[in-house]
Each structure stands twice: as C-alpha cells, then as structure tokens.
Amino acid sequence: MVGTQAKNVSRWRPRLTRRRFLAASALAAGGVGVYTWRVEPHWIEVVERDLAIGNLPAALRDRLLVQISDLHVGDSVDTAYLIAAMKRISSLQPALTVITGDFMTCESPEHIDTVLRVLEALNPGPLGCFAVLGNHDYTLDWSRKDVADALARRLFAVGVHVLRNECRPIDGLQLVGIDDLWSPCFHPEAVVPKVDWKQPTLTLCHNPDAVDLRRLAACRGWILSGHTHGGQCKPPFLPPPLLPVRNRRYTSGEFDVGNGRRLYINRGLGHLLRVRFNVRPEITVFRLREA
Image (cartoon, rainbow, N blue to C red; front, side):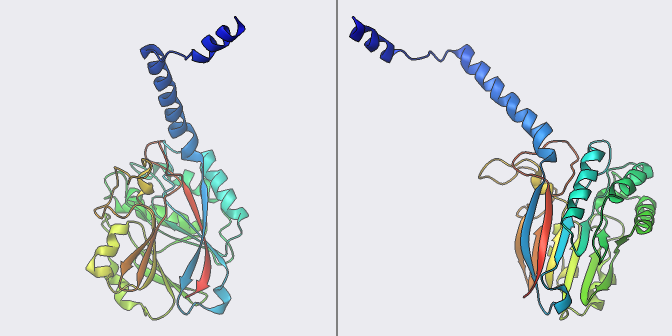
C-alpha cells in the first residue's frame, strides 16, 4: 500500500494550464517592465579601462580621466540621481573630467539653473572639467544657438570649460572640442587644420557619426563621444534596435575608425525616455597611458 502511494506521488506533475501560463507570463513581463523603468535607468556602471595616447607627457601618465555624457537634465531624469552621480565621480578623484554633450533636454533655457545645481556637486579634479555641447543643448529642434550660448556661458561660471571648435592645451595634452554635428555650430574646419596631430591629442565630439566625415579625416588618436545612450534597450546577443546614428555599428564602447583614430562611445547617464534594458548608464574611468 505504501509502495503504491509512493508510486502515485512520483507520477504527479503540476498541470500547466493556459491560465497559469498567462499569469506567469504577465508576472514576468511586469517584473521586466519594473526593472526597465525603475532599476536600470539609475544603476550606473563604472567602466575602468586604459586610454593609450602617443607621446603622453610624463606628468599625465597613470592619472585618471573621467568621461560622462548625456545627462539630459530635465523633466524625465531625476535630479537627485544626477547629483548622486556627480558625487560618485568626485569620490573617484580624477585628474581631469570631460563631458561629451547633451547637458539638458529643453525647449528654452528653462533647465540651465538645474544643470548648474547638478554640476555644483562635481569635483572634476586639479586639471579641471572640459566639455562639448550636444544636439539637445540647442533645444528640441537642435537649432537655437542663443540657448546653447547661454548654457556655455553659465557653465563657464561654475568651472566647466565648453570647447566649441577649439583646442586647449592641458599639461602638454591637446584637448580638441568640436561642436555638435546636428547643430548650427558644427565647424570642425575652424580647428582641425590648426592642430598639430603629431602631438598628444584627445578629441571630444558628441555625435560619433562626425568621425566618418572628411572634415575630421585629419584627426588622430582618441575621439570620445556619447549621443547613442547605447540604444537604451538591447536584446541579449543582438544589437540595439534603435540608434540615433547613421552608422549603425556605433553603439557603445571602443571602435577602430581607421587612419590612426580610435573612437569611444559612452552610454550616458540620462535618458529621453526613462527606460533602459541591458544598457546601464555609464561613468567611464580612463587611466592615461603612454601608447
């Protein structure tokens, strides 16, 4: 009798009814939705890697350079989250901090004060903070130069130096900043021909599509960009379905773009829509090395 009962128990299997399947599917979908909306958009990944630059001055070797991008200060991104991110960067004690555009998402100058409040929490390091503007810094239609000009002026007042088609020497390193590709101020011809590319150089340019243009063909060394947010949502083992670039291989991370140039695309801290899946926001910590 006992053996029969044990045999019957061993044969029992839970029935996967249609109702149970749908309930389990809804629960899983709900969990993914909550994660995509509430968890990953604020789950920052600190990416640590070397940045090898030819003829790098001895004073800069082994020092830290932090890149952030795409803060998108505005209605969609939590200000407290961004302030916490700035404090986290400060704790890393970088020598130099660079920001590759899209400080805000705006229709006018309405968010500039909040941008400044966020950046007041940043201690960029002894060599300072340098930046370029992104398309959204020119408002939603990427055309208002007056708003971008006002942002750049106010950023300078809090110690963020915005490079607009210009080159700035930093302890023997040439830092080149090119204005946004989609803006009315994209003029690489104003700076690229004037740079001695045989010297140690690092270039900042918000939109990675710019590196494919002839006007940037003379550049050498590393180019740091943002803009893509890594696609924000990426299926496992597949490329992200939505990218705001013409060259679809420019997702995030490092790319060899030929002619002695290497591109690094930061995934950004902010977002336009509060969704991220398999594409965490990023703080990139580069250790400067001699190539």
